[in-house]
Image 1 (cartoon, rainbow, N blue to C red):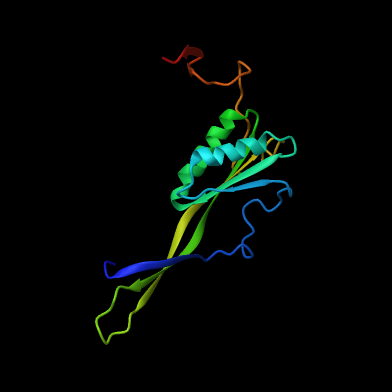
Image 2 (cartoon, rainbow, N blue to C red; image 1 turned 30 degrees about the vertical axis):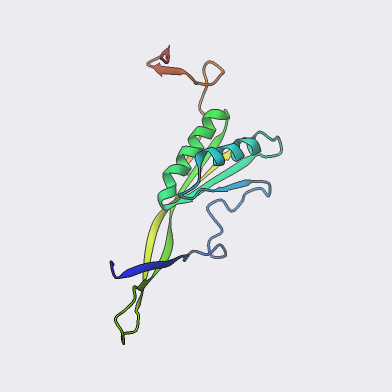
Length: 165
């Protein structure tokens, strides 16, 4: 591959073919597309501000490839900041096509190109203020808060909590 350079990456799954894992979303749902280079601070700032509005009931975080871990991180942080969020997680694979062209070929030879098809993992996570169907796959209920507040600054093990140092 040292004689080739990547020209472009195309998504083989078009939006018309696959509407997404949550087809029955309300029109006011916020969709967060997490990319590899996205800043968590920026994503969470926008998402938290929108979820604090009473009109916003649901938010969907989506990411694929190297952005999957960042997507999960954003969701977990948001769940800790905003209590009582119901979660549904959907996993799938997305088909990508990479187009590679040869570096300057020797004189008199046409430059060949390669097309590589890749299946990359993708995750979509729905967070909702409203109760969701607990029977659907990937459902997680809100985390119970025994003290009624956040867990910031405390470690809890086997029923006893200690303050952080």
